[in-house]
Amino acid sequence: MKKLVSLGLVSLMLIASLVVTPRPASAQGPGLVSSILNRMERNRRDLRSLHAGLVMQKYNAQLHDMDTLFGEVQYIPGSGRNMSVRVDWHKPQVEMLAVKDGQYTLYRPRLNMAYKGTTASTSKSTKVSSVLGFGLNASGAQLKSNFDVQPVGEGTLDAGGPHVVMLKLIPKGNAGYQFAEVWVDDSGMPVQTRVTEKNGDSTLVRLTPATPCLRRARSRIF
Image (cartoon, rainbow, N blue to C red; front, side, top):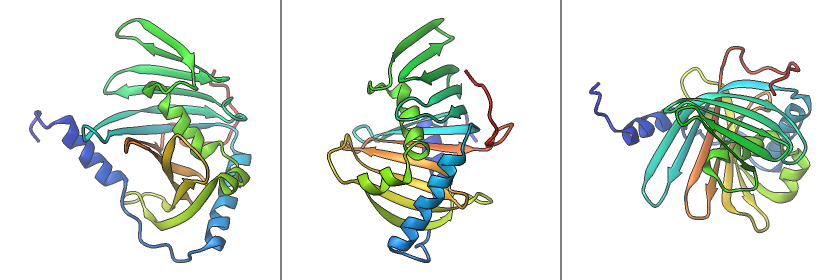
């Protein structure tokens, strides 16, 4: 392949492999939704820590442009915004992001600079923590209360990937985005989440195996 292939083309090739439109779910309706949300709730309650590979894709609807980032994430659950997240980005640039107790620190080695702020900001640098927390940190009761949850279909994200069911979550009240989509595996783990903003921009976060892989053992990452 020529070295001059554009980043946009590479991103389109990647998202085509990651986001396979699933076939219609075999069982529709409230029963299916409740079953999936119950699995997600059990996963949330049992989750103590997580270490995984990470792919994030940020799509700009106005420019029809997409940025793709690759790295690893370590995550410890917490109530509300108090989860702890560390992201080590490897490509296209090396950066480290740590989020804890509603505060973030973003370190950019190439500039030898660190930036600090609150997760309530709309910084694209902290977008990964809000999208990741959307799938992992919300309880089943919160999802039922705050969203119209619609089953979209089921299938695999790519060849050899886990079986997933795709849900679309439409906010019942005012929200800062249009809707979210969550791909949930059979254990209740949301392995991929995408949030679409009101202007059409979207952020997709996907968990992939790391070394060690996804785990539920207690650990200290901060």
